[in-house]
Length: 384
Ligand SMILES: Cc1ncc(COP(=O)(O)O)c(C=O)c1O
Image 1 (tube, rainbow, N blue to C red):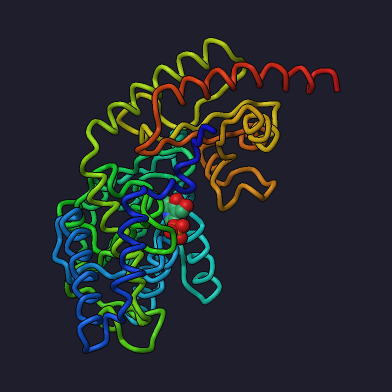
Image 2: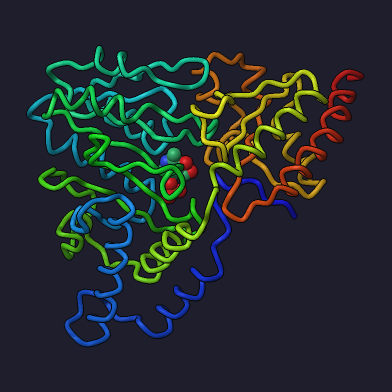
């Protein structure tokens, strides 16, 4: 089996599983308990917090554990909106965000908030000028993702952060779920106030993530109860998950050349595919700088994404049609439409995404499988 759906989720690293099993067997205390087993669990949680903080170059007290990227995004946006509503009720985001940002914005709109959804160019990029132009006296938050989950486009986060530095009252949230532990982004250097991460995108466990929240930024919690995580996020800590996430971060540090090797494989993959198959469109900027090299998005106009995904599966290759969360909906990808693709182009896309365990041979075999499968499917469409 060739697994190339790493943007949906990654295979949990065996060392992460060992750490989690050990915690479940031996350090099962509640970190809030006063006895020794509780203290051990608490130490583990704090150690993990330091690991995540080090990666983001921030203070450990600026890291909150959540149940994943969706909760981190909801907490950041709803938490800021609730906290700052007396100052203004305007939010800015883009038209290509993950549903865990996009749908939150829609919900807030229903509650009377004004939301600006900024357009993107044909590579899926938002312009820092457009962000600045959209600011009003009512704006309290700008939320823009780092790496797009469908096409891999990298947003100009540093440039946007620089613009926003002139407006210190406006907070900046970044959904870094697809980039954390892969493409460096330090919140303080980039002028970011809140940043979301999720462990299962980098070979950690599912159901655990974190939100960076800059010191002195106040947000209203989504979950109240026992007051864990300094009152920002009540609920007994998912200690095995937290320890597993920290282990996954440490393991990523042993990886060398991840981005460079993905870039090289992506380039030869695209050269090969575009020379052998027609029509094919590459979604996003393929020149290197503008797109995460571990995500490849292609459209084969005339073919249906689902049909392609299943045909590839029969060849032993697992990829996605657009993003995992929306791949069961037979609607054209909102992201590709925002980038100017037609319905037909947007309905014929597949996403190939690499993880730390992906090999060059797997990418080559995926290309060969596509070269076998696509002409056959095109023939079927032609005779129909
Ligand atoms: C960009 C982005 N944000 C947020 C999420 C949600 O993260 P989680 O699955 O941990 O809830 C995802 C997951 O696909 C994502 O790709």
